[in-house]
Image (tube, rainbow, N blue to C red; front, side, top):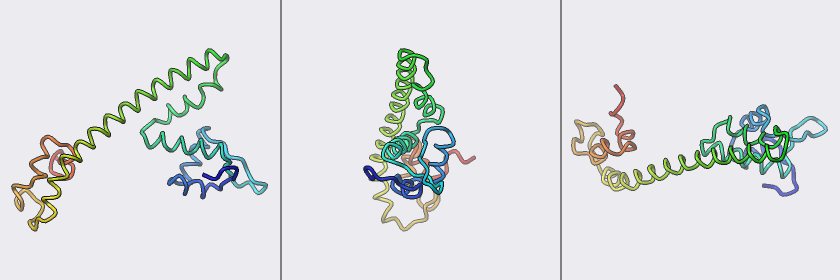
Length: 160
């Protein structure tokens, strides 16, 4: 991020590893407001850069658009400080619950990766076709009934 420097939409998108379309979408949804150059080009100052970075992080964490809108509007849509605080607290509690769900998915996926790693290492030297007939004792296939990631890799479960 460039402190005290404005960035073009392309430069900000590149820095955030996203697309200009994503940034325009946040703008269309009222979540991000860039300034404009005299020629009308979007420019993102430090505050807009930080806000965009946070929006991208939350989106990547699986936070839904309606939650982003509610968070962004909690203060501006309230009539009093007390109402703003209550709305913000409710949204932050929902966000915390969502992030707990994401943490659980990450933990389960890491566990599956840990279990799958040795099986894949065995397969790295395999010269047989990666099919049930070609490799009936495939270690990844043996994991598939209890490790969903192995079932996804093996590719037979749930196709029919």
